[in-house]
Length: 174
Image (cartoon, rainbow, N blue to C red; front, side):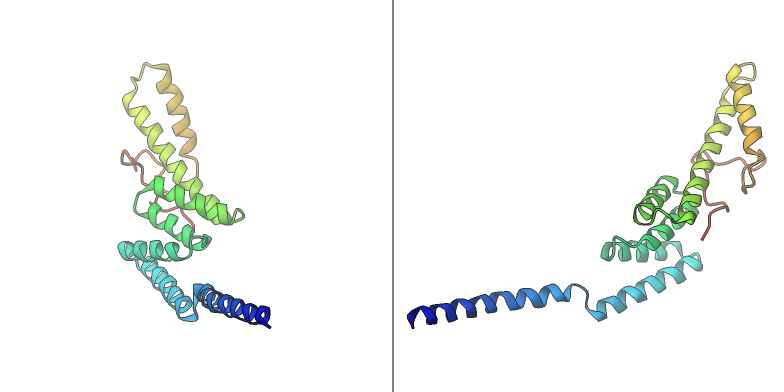
């Protein structure tokens, strides 16, 4: 009988400790929190669509803190960074989106656009600083001429990029 009482006490102790742990683990994402995340996503999309970039960024970053595996949020954050001329951050966000969803052609395209605009800025700068009689100048001229044929807004000599390149001047896909 004494062994039976000890067993009951042990079971009661296990239940007392285990039940709160199980309840807390089930609270990881309550319906109210899911609703808040849904609202946050909707607000971020609205802010992005209305070019409220600061607000959209805060909402997207907050959403990604709560749900870091949200490929779509990373994609939109990449678009936002591209639109606000932050190519390094845009590329990082697109890469995170692609780690989560490697089949997202939009993210591959937009990352390519960002990198192409950075390359354009580098070649234009190389052209500007190289002497016309330098062999490199002729090579750079050839590359620039070829790049001008790419159907992407902003890749013309008349639209000279800023030193940091402007990846968001059209060309990214939503």
